[in-house]
Image (cartoon, rainbow over all chains, first blue to last red; front, top):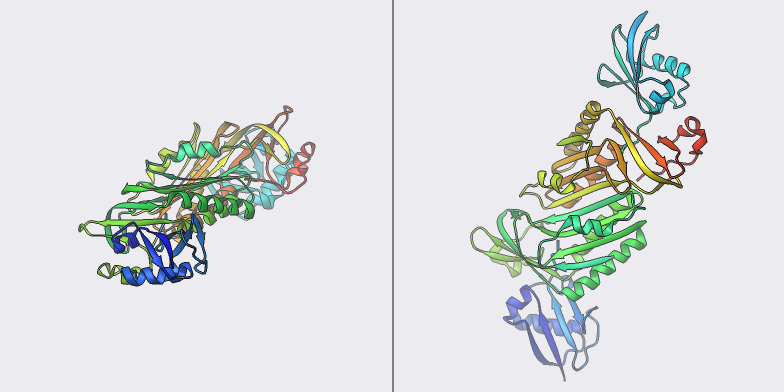
Length: 80
Length: 80
Length: 155
Length: 155
């Protein structure tokens, strides 16, 4: 069990009803944690279209999580 | 024999030493007249890279000339 | 090679001057403007949410990629954050080069990548008082009420 | 769809505003700038000779061709005539469209055609006091003294 800080952006923040939370999780990777959070908050966007940043760097979904990590979940982007 | 008004632009004007002249010519087409003028003034640019306007309209070299026509000879362009 | 996130109106002429270079013969700029409609709905305003630090980092990576791929002298990208009105400049990309082909190609590359890679989200406000996050496919489920089931239409 | 020949400095922001359209989501501009060198020679100034009436007519024909080929809302082209200093804008092309692909493609089409079809001639003044008409291949013979024997290099 590890504790991570999760932040949500745009539609994820609205659906979660919060900009961020501290989570105790068994998730091994960022991808596993996303599935967990998406189920809990009802995120509809498929993971392939979303992005994750761990400790301020964009990261692949397979990245292993460590205790104390900061995890940012980005819904599909729409710049320009 | 017909009389036409010829105008020269840019390097043609400099090589001819005049912006225009009245010419009495036997030339049947604009292309024939160009060959005549190019020989007389020493124009070096090949006709394929030059353009002609007759009576204020760009025209093909094969256009027939009539008495009183106004003929503009354009050396290769370099806009932009 | 600068990417910046702006909270006040973008000044294209000032940005262009910052790219000036006497070796440059060609300048190409792209501007994304807030349109009065999107996907058939009348739009009154936009809000851009931006993760500024990561957006700048990814934007400058894109600019360096453009410099490696095309023969350009300078390039920059500025994107708005916050609330925008109709007609405002949402994003500006400028490229200078010796010859025009490189400037056109690099400018197109940069805006294409910026639109798909920067952590920026767009919320549209509609004339009927409704609003919604614009996020292409996937929003049909997330925003079923908006009926965004067709291919996403973007400038 | 306006083409104009300007004898005083071009004001890109004013021209852009004249193309404004609330339906437009994309704006692409090209500017040709007077460079400090050409074909390896240091340039100090330029003079453009223009046959204004035919240049405008041919320029507006090109703009209409662009409108027929690409999904654009508006386009304009303004070209300088007379004496220009280093760094000045020699030509400006602006295109607005709903989506960016059309604006990029139309802008590129317009400047490519303008450079080869408008009756405009460029005389360069060099740092050594010499000058010459820039006219690509063919000028090797016409301007042998300038040694313009290599492929012509233009922005």
